[in-house]
Image (cartoon, rainbow, N blue to C red; front, side, top):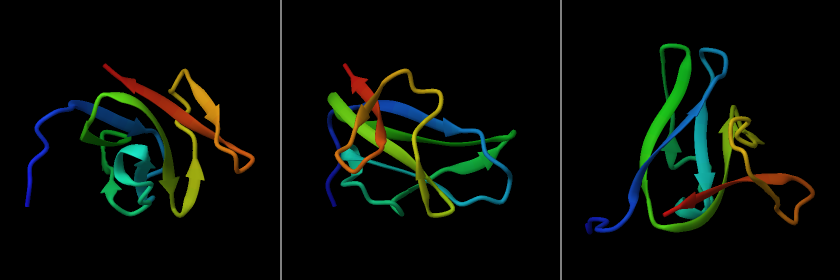
Length: 90
């Protein structure tokens, strides 16, 4: 098992009702909708991931429904008729 030597710690967070199943999926994890689960605490779902430098697109998956990050200032069309949130890691 290797370790990731480059990247930046990025905190993903989303306000949603308690009891939801929330994940983040994007270009940084192969768009895997079950790989990175957010934990609920203090009224917010959150997780911190190491993300490599560059431009990444992502979405949250809340109880199986894909949704953009409402706090993200940049979105991009995804070619499927909806939008992805955009994250640039320096």
